[in-house]
Figure 1: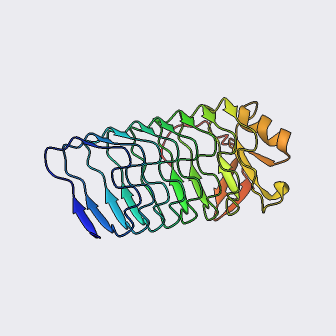
Figure 2: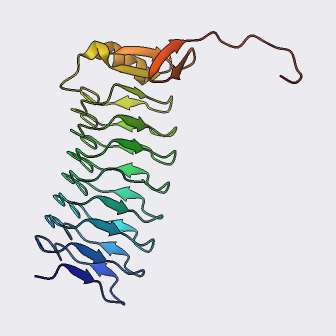
Length: 238
C-alpha cells in the first residue's frame, strides 16, 4: 500500500522481482552504493513516475522496468555498459532518455513499444543495437546513430511509423532483416542516408528504400537536397 520507498543505506543489490507488481508505488529512491538492480526488480510497477539511478549502479537486469507504463523519466548511471533485454519494454509514457556514453550495447526489445519516445541519441561508444531494440516506438521521429556502431539487429526500428529518415555511419557492417521496415509507411518514402558501397546502401537497395549519399547531400529544414562538393583550393581567410 506504500506509494513511496527509500532503499536503505548499505544495500548493494536490489534483488530479482523485489518490487515487481507493486502497483501503488509511485516513487523510489535508490541511494548511492547500490551496484546492481536485479532482473524484473520493478517490472509492472505501473504507477512509478520517475527513476534516478545512481552512478554506483553498473548492472541493470533484464525486464527491470518492463511494463512501468506511467514512467516519464529515467536517469541512467554514467558507468552503465549494457542496457539488457526488455529493460524498458512497454514504458509507453517515457518521452526521452539520455543513454550514457559508457553504454556499448542495447539489448533486444530494450525500448520496444516505448510509444512516447520521440528522439534517441546513440553515442559513439556503442557498437551493437540488438534486434527489436526500438520496435514499435511509433512516435520516434529522430534517431542519431553513433559513429562506431557495427551492427543493427533485425526489426531494431520496425514499426517506427513516424520515422522518415535515418543516417547510417560507415562503421555499420551488418543490418538485420526488417530493421527499418515501418509498417504504415510506403518504402519509397523512407530515406536512408549513408555512404556508397556500405551496408547502408546495400540494405536500401535490397528493401526498396531511397538512398541518399551523405557525401553529396545536406539536410536543410527537414528535406534533403543535392549540393556541389567544395572545389576551392586556395588558402587564406573567408
